[in-house]
Length: 243
Image 1 (cartoon, helix red, strand yellow):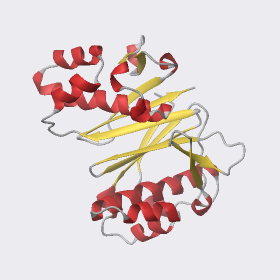
Image 2 (spheres, helix red, strand yellow; image 1 turned 60 degrees about the vertical axis):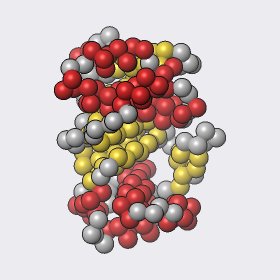
Image 3 (cartoon, helix red, strand yellow; image 1 turned 90 degrees about the horizontal axis):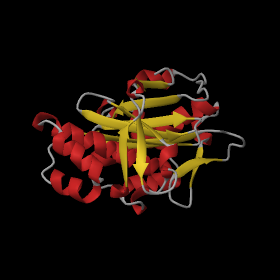
Image 4 (spheres, helix red, strand yellow; image 1 turned 90 degrees about the vertical axis):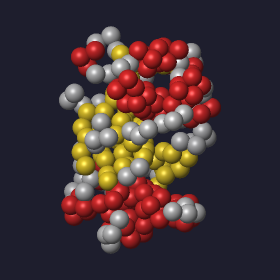
């Protein structure tokens, strides 16, 4: 689709300083392999971009790989947001909405939304000028409690879809559905305050677009569009947005 762009953020991106254009109606997705930065001095550069609050949060992680992932995700978020807004990354400021969803702060008149997700060794960042956007990514892996999660958190229509999937596809079908649901509640800012089994994702009336629609109970479900994507082999992803 012409408005949907996905690319990898590599170390080469650090040398680029020119602003980037984010046109109305477009969604830009960036994916980052955290292991690319695991032995790099770039990690220190990214860490220096974090706010005091973010630095404090990062220090509370017990495992080094979790601290690395946090620095990469939030540091690159500031770099890319700065390029889209044409300001230095050190001037990018965020605040939390009442529901806890982060948003841009201190840039008057900016129509700009973003979201980030991470799983295993991958971080995905989404940017758009749509009012709201949500993204999720999951590393596809064996899930011993898969059926219990489906029975508890999935809508009846989603449970039926997974039940009918070929055995070789069930694992991927589970993560495809899970990322769509997570991306939706991240986009709305409701998080787990909205029961995950109260809505479902379904193929749009124009299947050639590759998009899904959201149905079920709750306000505004029909106003959202959902687009699955595969950021890297072995991962499932989804982005949700509303105009």
